[in-house]
Length: 67
Image (cartoon, rainbow, N blue to C red; front, side, top):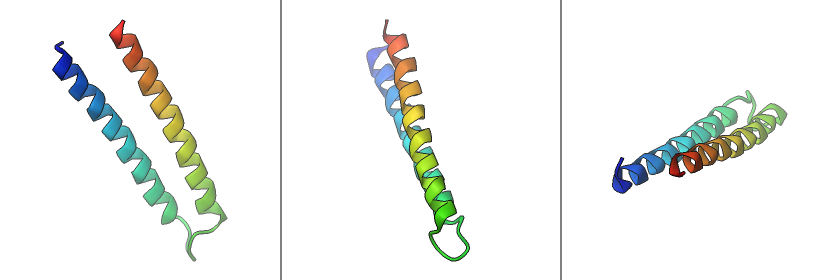
């Protein structure tokens, strides 16, 4: 693939990962019946962990494509 196409693919994957993170945060915020409770807080922490692992996995995959 060309360098320009590779850059677009990498940017698209990063944007998708951020959209997944935002979606999880929105879902977590709407979990609590009476507002932002303990369950929602655990969901937000889980979303942060999932986001970090997802970005680490994407970074590892993309670095393997470069070599």
